[in-house]
Length: 231
Image (tube, rainbow, N blue to C red; front, side, top):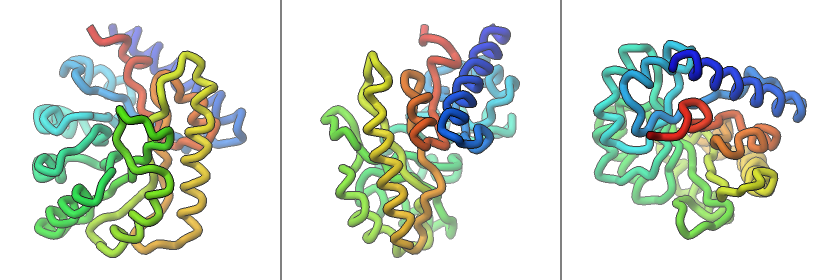
């Protein structure tokens, strides 16, 4: 199992490197986040042992359950799923970065909880570039007005954008989605909002991360290509 995992990680890293070099980018600037939702403690231990210390979780409950194990092994948790406002207080001090800020009510809850604890919380704004009804996120044209609203709080630090492209059997078809997010990120970085920086572009999953890297992703969220299909 450990051998397969290491081989899978090497393969993913190699594909990231090739995609980065094809786009004249430095592969070292791209963070590989291994998606560990529903994975066992042993699988998590193995992936950290294999050198991946940035883990992505989709559910607040799993963050709580796995936090001690992951933090004791020196790894960080990224929250990458849809976050319910009533779950914020349970995970705020456990995650390094929330990738899925997608509405004003969630921003308000995050600010309120962060103020209470006198901390700042790092977030990415989730954008539903393809406007799929099955996915969460702001439409591209809603992002700038949204940032104007949330940028006033020093307790909320926007660090970039995140998107999920539609699943395509031909990954090349996802390219326009990733390109649009990168262009939006560039546009926002010129607006110089307070408490907002376009440091991270979190885009690309097992099916399409190579295209995402070619289009500017510096965080990719990969599960199946590392662990194999869920049993």
